[in-house]
Image 1 (tube, rainbow, N blue to C red):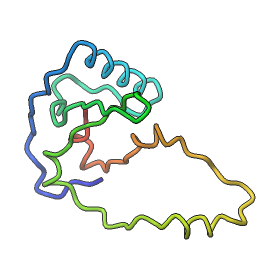
Image 2 (tube, helix red, strand yellow; image 1 turned 180 degrees about the horizontal axis):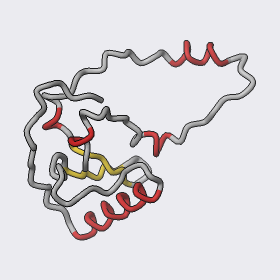
Image 3 (tube, rainbow, N blue to C red; image 1 turned 45 degrees about the vertical axis):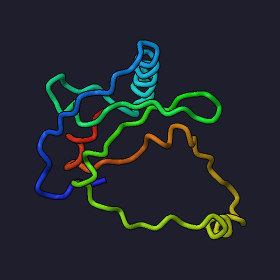
Length: 123
């Protein structure tokens, strides 16, 4: 993801009110993501209020932590890369000797930010 110039101002947003149980679940997810180096801690005065942490309930009853980046949509450059069609992708690997499996649950958190976007990509 990349941010177009001019860079957005500091986008301070109040967080959603959540129950104590939900707050504990958010903290659990944040600690897990810190442990596997998907996210990192930042200074307390940095752009920490750009997004709100939101828990999404999956079909199996588990939760997924998401960042609510709607305020950044006006500043984010669109990525016009079309998604490949599954049958075409499978045809390309049908004669492959090795195929790698991806962890789809954690892959969700692997959006890469450019250096310009980094100050705005914090949850």
